[in-house]
Length: 260
Image 1 (cartoon, rainbow, N blue to C red):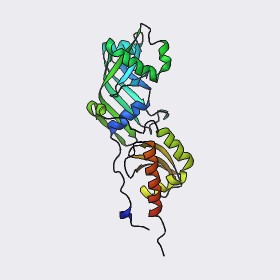
Image 2 (cartoon, rainbow, N blue to C red; image 1 turned 45 degrees about the vertical axis):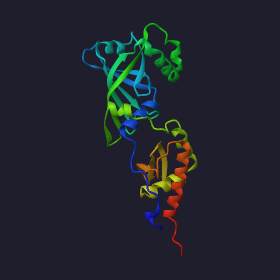
Image 3 (spheres, rainbow, N blue to C red; image 1 turned 60 degrees about the vertical axis):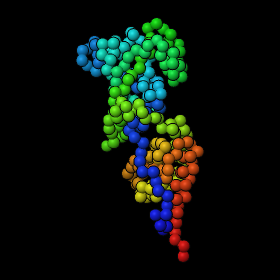
Image 4 (cartoon, helix red, strand yellow; image 1 turned 120 degrees about the vertical axis):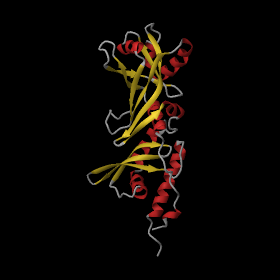
Protein backbone atom coordinates (compact mmCIF):
# COMPACT_ATOMS: atom_id res chain seq x y z
CA UNK A 1 0.00 0.00 0.00
CA UNK A 2 1.27 3.48 -0.81
CA UNK A 3 2.32 5.98 1.85
CA UNK A 4 -0.83 7.84 2.97
CA UNK A 5 1.22 10.92 3.85
CA UNK A 6 1.79 11.47 0.14
CA UNK A 7 -1.95 11.59 -0.63
CA UNK A 8 -3.77 14.95 -0.90
CA UNK A 9 -5.24 16.32 2.31
CA UNK A 10 -9.03 16.49 2.59
CA UNK A 11 -11.16 19.50 3.45
CA UNK A 12 -11.79 19.14 7.17
CA UNK A 13 -15.15 20.79 7.78
CA UNK A 14 -18.82 20.78 6.85
CA UNK A 15 -20.77 23.94 6.00
CA UNK A 16 -22.01 25.77 9.10
CA UNK A 17 -25.54 25.33 10.38
CA UNK A 18 -26.19 28.90 9.22
CA UNK A 19 -25.16 28.07 5.65
CA UNK A 20 -27.07 24.82 5.68
CA UNK A 21 -30.16 26.61 6.99
CA UNK A 22 -29.94 29.18 4.20
CA UNK A 23 -29.47 26.41 1.62
CA UNK A 24 -32.50 24.52 2.87
CA UNK A 25 -34.67 27.64 2.82
CA UNK A 26 -33.47 28.58 -0.67
CA UNK A 27 -34.27 25.09 -1.95
CA UNK A 28 -37.87 25.21 -0.71
CA UNK A 29 -41.01 27.13 -1.54
CA UNK A 30 -43.51 25.68 0.97
CA UNK A 31 -43.32 25.45 4.76
CA UNK A 32 -45.42 25.15 7.90
CA UNK A 33 -46.25 28.48 9.54
CA UNK A 34 -46.99 28.48 13.27
CA UNK A 35 -48.76 31.50 14.76
CA UNK A 36 -50.48 32.17 18.10
CA UNK A 37 -54.21 31.61 17.79
CA UNK A 38 -56.68 34.40 18.50
CA UNK A 39 -59.65 32.05 18.16
CA UNK A 40 -58.37 29.64 20.81
CA UNK A 41 -56.29 32.00 22.91
CA UNK A 42 -52.67 31.08 23.53
CA UNK A 43 -52.59 27.93 21.42
CA UNK A 44 -50.13 27.48 18.53
CA UNK A 45 -51.86 27.42 15.13
CA UNK A 46 -50.04 25.65 12.27
CA UNK A 47 -50.88 26.20 8.61
CA UNK A 48 -49.46 25.57 5.15
CA UNK A 49 -47.42 28.53 3.91
CA UNK A 50 -46.00 28.91 0.39
CA UNK A 51 -43.07 31.34 0.52
CA UNK A 52 -40.09 32.76 -1.36
CA UNK A 53 -36.81 33.77 0.30
CA UNK A 54 -35.13 37.10 -0.41
CA UNK A 55 -31.36 37.72 -0.66
CA UNK A 56 -31.03 37.73 3.13
CA UNK A 57 -32.97 34.47 3.43
CA UNK A 58 -36.03 36.25 4.85
CA UNK A 59 -39.25 34.41 3.93
CA UNK A 60 -41.75 36.39 1.85
CA UNK A 61 -45.39 35.33 2.38
CA UNK A 62 -48.48 36.27 0.38
CA UNK A 63 -51.29 36.27 2.92
CA UNK A 64 -55.01 36.91 2.72
CA UNK A 65 -56.51 39.03 5.46
CA UNK A 66 -59.32 36.46 5.60
CA UNK A 67 -56.94 33.67 6.61
CA UNK A 68 -56.73 32.63 10.24
CA UNK A 69 -52.93 32.94 10.36
CA UNK A 70 -53.11 36.54 9.09
CA UNK A 71 -55.53 37.43 11.87
CA UNK A 72 -53.22 35.75 14.34
CA UNK A 73 -50.21 37.73 13.10
CA UNK A 74 -52.10 41.01 13.35
CA UNK A 75 -52.52 40.36 17.07
CA UNK A 76 -49.12 38.72 17.70
CA UNK A 77 -46.41 39.05 15.00
CA UNK A 78 -44.09 36.46 16.54
CA UNK A 79 -44.17 33.22 14.56
CA UNK A 80 -42.10 30.29 13.40
CA UNK A 81 -41.67 28.64 10.01
CA UNK A 82 -40.70 24.97 9.66
CA UNK A 83 -38.86 24.12 6.43
CA UNK A 84 -38.04 20.50 5.60
CA UNK A 85 -35.75 19.01 2.99
CA UNK A 86 -37.54 18.75 -0.38
CA UNK A 87 -38.68 15.20 -1.05
CA UNK A 88 -37.90 13.99 2.46
CA UNK A 89 -41.54 13.47 3.34
CA UNK A 90 -40.88 15.11 6.69
CA UNK A 91 -39.01 12.08 8.03
CA UNK A 92 -37.00 12.56 11.22
CA UNK A 93 -33.80 11.49 9.47
CA UNK A 94 -33.98 14.38 7.00
CA UNK A 95 -32.62 17.90 7.62
CA UNK A 96 -35.02 20.68 8.59
CA UNK A 97 -34.89 24.17 10.02
CA UNK A 98 -37.30 26.16 12.17
CA UNK A 99 -37.08 29.92 11.68
CA UNK A 100 -38.31 32.12 14.52
CA UNK A 101 -39.05 35.78 14.02
CA UNK A 102 -41.52 38.60 13.51
CA UNK A 103 -43.85 38.67 10.51
CA UNK A 104 -44.97 42.08 9.28
CA UNK A 105 -46.80 43.39 6.23
CA UNK A 106 -44.43 44.92 3.71
CA UNK A 107 -44.71 48.64 2.97
CA UNK A 108 -46.03 49.54 -0.48
CA UNK A 109 -42.61 50.61 -1.81
CA UNK A 110 -41.22 47.10 -1.17
CA UNK A 111 -44.17 45.14 -2.52
CA UNK A 112 -43.17 45.26 -6.20
CA UNK A 113 -39.82 43.53 -5.57
CA UNK A 114 -41.51 41.00 -3.29
CA UNK A 115 -44.16 40.33 -5.93
CA UNK A 116 -41.54 39.56 -8.60
CA UNK A 117 -39.63 37.26 -6.25
CA UNK A 118 -42.77 35.46 -5.12
CA UNK A 119 -44.29 34.98 -8.59
CA UNK A 120 -41.00 33.54 -9.83
CA UNK A 121 -41.33 30.75 -7.25
CA UNK A 122 -45.14 30.49 -7.42
CA UNK A 123 -46.34 31.40 -10.95
CA UNK A 124 -49.88 30.22 -10.15
CA UNK A 125 -50.17 33.02 -7.57
CA UNK A 126 -50.39 35.55 -10.41
CA UNK A 127 -54.10 34.64 -10.60
CA UNK A 128 -54.86 36.10 -7.18
CA UNK A 129 -51.89 38.29 -6.23
CA UNK A 130 -53.83 41.44 -7.21
CA UNK A 131 -56.89 40.60 -5.12
CA UNK A 132 -57.50 43.33 -2.54
CA UNK A 133 -57.50 40.96 0.41
CA UNK A 134 -53.96 39.68 -0.33
CA UNK A 135 -50.77 41.42 0.81
CA UNK A 136 -47.09 40.53 1.08
CA UNK A 137 -45.53 39.91 4.47
CA UNK A 138 -41.93 39.20 5.49
CA UNK A 139 -40.38 37.40 8.41
CA UNK A 140 -37.45 39.07 10.16
CA UNK A 141 -35.49 36.06 11.41
CA UNK A 142 -34.47 36.32 15.05
CA UNK A 143 -33.07 32.80 15.43
CA UNK A 144 -33.09 29.47 13.63
CA UNK A 145 -32.89 25.90 14.88
CA UNK A 146 -31.28 23.55 12.39
CA UNK A 147 -31.55 19.77 12.60
CA UNK A 148 -29.19 17.89 10.29
CA UNK A 149 -30.52 14.50 11.34
CA UNK A 150 -30.31 12.24 14.36
CA UNK A 151 -27.84 13.64 16.91
CA UNK A 152 -26.81 16.74 14.92
CA UNK A 153 -28.66 19.99 15.67
CA UNK A 154 -28.16 23.48 17.02
CA UNK A 155 -29.24 27.11 17.22
CA UNK A 156 -28.22 29.78 14.70
CA UNK A 157 -28.43 33.49 15.52
CA UNK A 158 -30.36 35.78 13.23
CA UNK A 159 -27.11 37.56 12.37
CA UNK A 160 -25.31 34.38 11.41
CA UNK A 161 -28.31 33.21 9.40
CA UNK A 162 -28.51 36.47 7.44
CA UNK A 163 -24.75 36.63 6.86
CA UNK A 164 -24.56 33.10 5.46
CA UNK A 165 -25.21 32.24 1.83
CA UNK A 166 -26.89 29.23 0.22
CA UNK A 167 -24.50 26.54 -0.95
CA UNK A 168 -23.20 27.34 -4.47
CA UNK A 169 -24.05 23.78 -5.61
CA UNK A 170 -27.72 24.18 -4.72
CA UNK A 171 -28.94 24.25 -8.33
CA UNK A 172 -26.61 21.57 -9.66
CA UNK A 173 -26.87 19.16 -6.70
CA UNK A 174 -29.79 17.08 -8.06
CA UNK A 175 -27.92 16.43 -11.31
CA UNK A 176 -24.72 15.50 -9.47
CA UNK A 177 -26.59 13.05 -7.24
CA UNK A 178 -28.43 11.45 -10.16
CA UNK A 179 -25.24 11.08 -12.21
CA UNK A 180 -23.13 9.62 -9.40
CA UNK A 181 -25.78 7.14 -8.31
CA UNK A 182 -26.62 6.01 -11.85
CA UNK A 183 -23.12 5.84 -13.35
CA UNK A 184 -20.54 5.68 -10.54
CA UNK A 185 -21.77 3.25 -7.91
CA UNK A 186 -18.31 1.63 -7.84
CA UNK A 187 -16.66 4.98 -7.10
CA UNK A 188 -19.01 5.60 -4.17
CA UNK A 189 -18.02 2.25 -2.65
CA UNK A 190 -14.37 3.16 -3.17
CA UNK A 191 -14.81 6.55 -1.46
CA UNK A 192 -16.26 4.81 1.60
CA UNK A 193 -13.30 2.46 1.78
CA UNK A 194 -10.62 5.08 1.25
CA UNK A 195 -12.03 8.06 3.16
CA UNK A 196 -14.30 6.50 5.80
CA UNK A 197 -12.35 3.29 6.40
CA UNK A 198 -15.35 1.07 5.69
CA UNK A 199 -15.53 -1.83 3.26
CA UNK A 200 -19.18 -1.40 2.24
CA UNK A 201 -21.36 -3.50 -0.05
CA UNK A 202 -23.04 -0.53 -1.72
CA UNK A 203 -23.42 3.21 -1.32
CA UNK A 204 -25.82 5.91 -2.51
CA UNK A 205 -24.95 9.62 -2.58
CA UNK A 206 -27.72 11.43 -0.69
CA UNK A 207 -26.45 15.03 -0.44
CA UNK A 208 -23.67 17.17 -1.88
CA UNK A 209 -22.27 20.61 -1.02
CA UNK A 210 -19.20 22.71 -1.67
CA UNK A 211 -17.10 20.86 0.93
CA UNK A 212 -18.15 17.25 0.45
CA UNK A 213 -21.03 14.84 0.24
CA UNK A 214 -23.04 12.28 2.19
CA UNK A 215 -23.69 8.67 1.32
CA UNK A 216 -26.05 6.02 2.63
CA UNK A 217 -23.83 2.95 2.82
CA UNK A 218 -24.92 -0.65 3.29
CA UNK A 219 -22.81 -3.25 5.09
CA UNK A 220 -24.74 -6.49 5.08
CA UNK A 221 -28.11 -5.66 6.65
CA UNK A 222 -26.80 -2.48 8.30
CA UNK A 223 -27.14 1.03 6.83
CA UNK A 224 -24.88 3.94 7.75
CA UNK A 225 -24.98 7.62 6.92
CA UNK A 226 -21.44 8.77 6.12
CA UNK A 227 -19.86 12.16 5.45
CA UNK A 228 -17.06 12.21 2.85
CA UNK A 229 -15.00 15.42 2.62
CA UNK A 230 -13.53 16.72 -0.63
CA UNK A 231 -9.81 17.16 -1.17
CA UNK A 232 -10.62 20.87 -1.60
CA UNK A 233 -13.63 23.14 -1.95
CA UNK A 234 -15.72 22.77 -5.13
CA UNK A 235 -18.12 25.62 -5.97
CA UNK A 236 -19.33 24.54 -9.43
CA UNK A 237 -20.48 21.27 -10.99
CA UNK A 238 -17.30 21.22 -13.09
CA UNK A 239 -15.08 21.71 -10.04
CA UNK A 240 -17.04 18.95 -8.30
CA UNK A 241 -16.48 16.57 -11.21
CA UNK A 242 -12.74 17.30 -11.21
CA UNK A 243 -12.29 16.76 -7.47
CA UNK A 244 -14.36 13.55 -7.49
CA UNK A 245 -12.20 12.16 -10.29
CA UNK A 246 -9.06 13.09 -8.34
CA UNK A 247 -10.45 11.36 -5.27
CA UNK A 248 -11.00 8.15 -7.25
CA UNK A 249 -7.40 8.26 -8.46
CA UNK A 250 -6.14 8.96 -4.95
CA UNK A 251 -8.23 6.12 -3.51
CA UNK A 252 -7.00 3.67 -6.13
CA UNK A 253 -3.43 4.69 -5.36
CA UNK A 254 -3.96 4.01 -1.68
CA UNK A 255 -5.13 0.47 -2.36
CA UNK A 256 -2.84 -0.36 -5.26
CA UNK A 257 -0.65 -3.41 -4.83
CA UNK A 258 2.97 -2.48 -4.03
CA UNK A 259 5.46 -3.11 -6.85
CA UNK A 260 7.47 -6.37 -6.67
